[in-house]
Length: 170
Image (cartoon, rainbow, N blue to C red; front, top):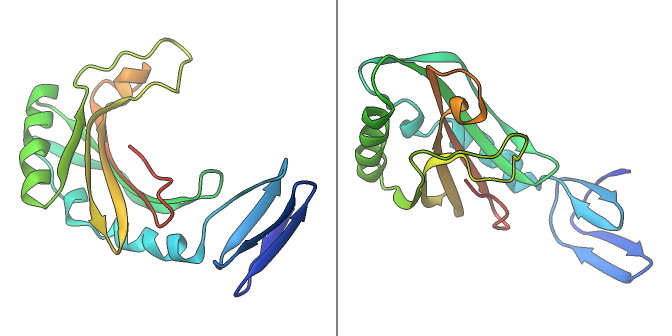
């Protein structure tokens, strides 16, 4: 069941009563609330305009269109860009370590050669994960390679996720 929230949404469940003081679209499933708040919906275009999504090594080129939106299941805003590279993976990672740092991002973790088990999507596939504040929310910038999931050996992606309630991650 999806509910459109007003200034406050009151949800009654078997466990008692909960009050939410946020606006946005919420869904009730198995007694748990999830969805994007209005603030997170408004955050997606801000993330999409981040200059770091335009930064890329000279021997790469953008693939497809930039994308953005709000993940209703997990309740966070996102934006990203895919690139095709003809340089080494190490050169791509070196480039983003410098470019992201110059753009105010702080390196949170590095996993240059992640190797998830087949079918295991719970493994961190981000080669690099950065963090910084964007519009009052903690944003996470991931540099990742589809080849780590057995796909597109010549592509890599940049994705920024953020949420005002702190549910975003790399």
